[in-house]
Length: 362
Image 1 (spheres, one colour):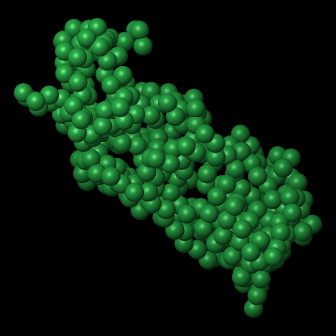
Image 2: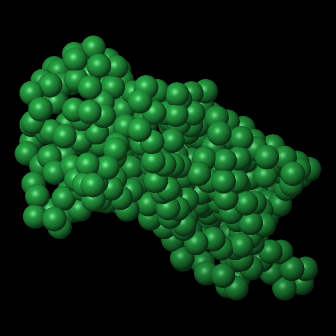
Image 3: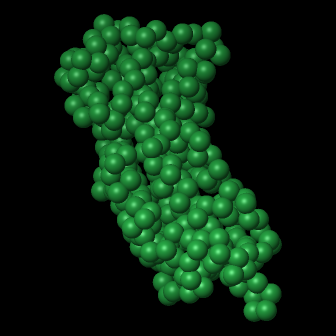
């Protein structure tokens, strides 16, 4: 902080105090003279700091009356800039989600700045720091490794202190529930996948879930709760959990090979996968191993990726609304930038029935 100009130090201190409730909405901030004496700086320094708080939408200066705390929209010059941080950009369902965001933002004269952090906390930190240096008007972000607390919480608190709205999509880290979010009902999705298989006569389910993000842990919990509600258990050998580091070449890993052996031995009659990518990878390996899908094994994915209908057999999957999801997030962000409060939303999955999961109950 010692390297910062004094007016920035004063502004940062006052931002934190406003965020902490030391100065509440409608309360006077202190006179210029009181602030000058408190921080031992010039009157001009105090005026520069107050101007920054005005730009942030945190205070109102009223001639002859004083400076009052208020949480309103930030002052903006020209075009609205919305920062977006996702795990990936160019593959799988992410382009469709981004397209939904961009269409809404463009219609409203806003510009989208899209960034990928590849599920890496240091990359995420660098992007957040850059967006604070050249402030965006709002931030839409997919949390990084959302099954655990983030070391970047301090930067997100600085966004809040500067009155820059933050909206999470897909998942959010523990302890960040105060930020609104747009997510899928992943717990409900896990239950729906398991329920669909069980209702179709499959009784020996296997599961493949990524468990360092909120989506995967919620899908796993829903999957387990549904099977337990039917009086069934899924033994450890039929349940494979993996992390971001393990996702590359997963089917050729020790874990992947162990699960393939279980499936080859016929110990499971349906495999439910974290997403369509891994469903497609295991489908290929199973077919190479002589396991017939769906004759020997049913298969379910998540997300309804474009390629899922092109597989042989075509993949039964839970459909993600993609563009509608991104559009909803963008509309919420624009309202937040305008100073409105927004509630969190959990969107429902849609079952897409295809050949990989025939009905055995008939």
